[in-house]
Image (tube, rainbow, N blue to C red; front, side, top):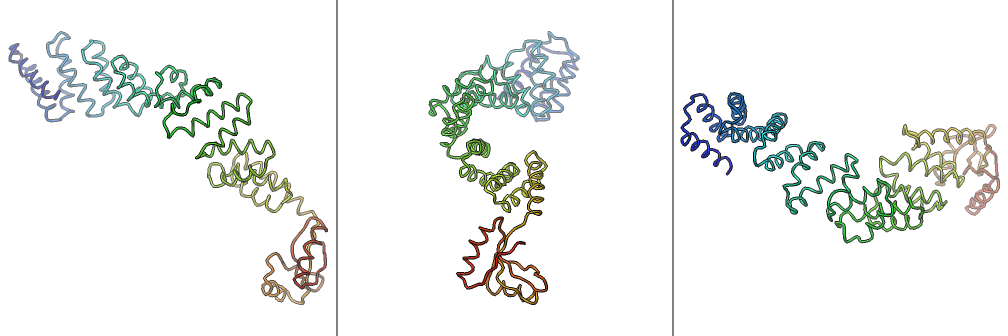
Length: 377
């Protein structure tokens, strides 16, 4: 629509004002034709030539400037667009808001530029248009960490989550709780995140119980939420709850070092050293804080177990190792192993830190018809 109007404008202007300068007339026709045919690189180049060769009070200057700017936009030539937009601003050409809208589209992947042009366009926007842009602006400001600027934006349901985050990031925890009293003021898909920041605000204000209750109420917990709850339950020594969440986190690649390390710690505390070693080994493959902690504990634990006398239950002595292996297979003795005893091979079952545990286990084997001897290994 604009293109057709511009074409007619140039045509009637040339006729009406009786332009006789051959070069100007030729340039205007080339600019007109190239732009109409979408040959924007030509309309940009010739437009620039025209603007350089004519004075600022030229009758067609403003229209040629606009063609040059549109050409730069369609070519996605950001540098040329900025250069000629700057000229339009200096010369106070009418209709700048139209070009600021183009700038928002052209620089939507450049937060600084986008925000710069939004501020220039803001005074021209209707309330409806502001609603269309405001969420994009809030997201870009959040990425840049400009929390105070977010709080200066008009309150709107589409950006209320970003306002909550901004209040939290600026240490206004009571305001976070106040802002999150009514979940109906937030888009449905943001409610879990809103509850998370509400819970964090309670935690920052010292109300741990309310913080945990709030975050536990979240339907779809993110790994970060689960980690928060895990830390709380570890601190409160509620290990059953902590273990449940740690096993969930162990499925998340970014949290595996943390999850495996603390699963090892829980088994360590329960004196299930074999399981502890199993988890520490999993954690130790990560070159992170928790991976390094796991390596240290693993070294200590393996050294301690290596030097420690363990008890086992021997159920038979055989002349050959192969016979002992066959005996285990035949009787489906999954927890048993072969160990040499003098000139014979013994079948031993289980390994225990205390003799008492070995005795209890031997009773089960006796009930199955095996003779048993408690032995140190």
